[in-house]
Image (cartoon, rainbow, N blue to C red; front, side):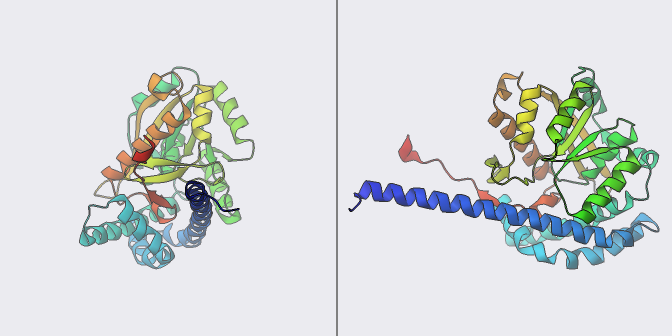
Length: 327
């Protein structure tokens, strides 16, 4: 039996959509594996960057990082083009060069966490917006602190731990070597760590009930089947709705943390205003919350376009214009 033109076109559209979604899931899995590979490289060279003055460690990292991150060059280049379509080839090349210098600084910061102390971090990290954090904590409902993989995002936890706030970090499942390093740092700085998918949400609920702080990043998803393509500036990012669902159900104040490096390489952490998820009419749906969070991430990326670590691994795709024929 032959299909009519309309049915045939509809069948073809459905097949193309299914193929694109399948390709998107595969790309997300590849991106996750690439991030894990990067962390293995990170762990392998970190020991070389811990000793001596930090400036010396940074110079070593500048020599190592271009070589070690070369497997991720194609993804990084493609994502820069998607994120900044109005930039010239020369401007994009300069951004990529600046990004590699950023990665060297990030590598140095992360490596030296193994030898630093909370008191040293308190002096080292330039912290802003503590009044916003205290205002959120004063509500007594716990606080969710979220951020993207920008700047030295590990310093967000460091800024909390240095103030003896005992945060709980919800992290993506990782390879053994990475997990051991993270748990070593957690013990050093009195941070609780729980992996997504291992009773993490039950633990988070308990921490909220006791007025505690739960920290997580929202721009790298390890659950491609549950993730949704969500607008991020001129592109779409595959985003796990789990954190937004948790914030919506628990009605906890959410503080966005900005992390970035200044021109001198100093690490800054800025705790911005608290969002009342589920209470604010503009954040009355999970989708609203996801869109708001990515709008904040996009603002951070625009402010420091070379300082988004995740662009090395995650798949991005252009924002497709709405189908006008459907209206």
